[in-house]
Length: 87
Image 1 (spheres, rainbow, N blue to C red):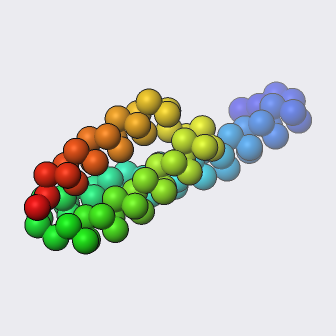
Image 2: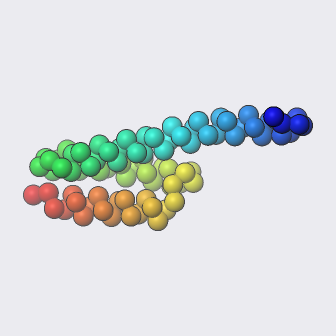
Image 3: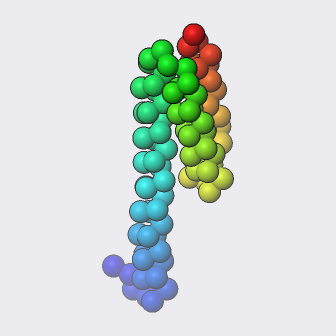
């Protein structure tokens, strides 16, 4: 428990920010799962659409500092390689 007013405020802020960050990261993970599922099939149009959504969500997460840029680039690169394999 916080001993000062400022420490109590920081605790409240941390709680709120944790929830916001968790929601954003969960959205990115769900998009990644969706892309991986679609990439397992043969529908290139659906895979491309899912990939665009994923790229958008992970780029927003990078911009706000929730995901490391190198991690995002690694995911996008692997996704693009898998997307290129779909005929």
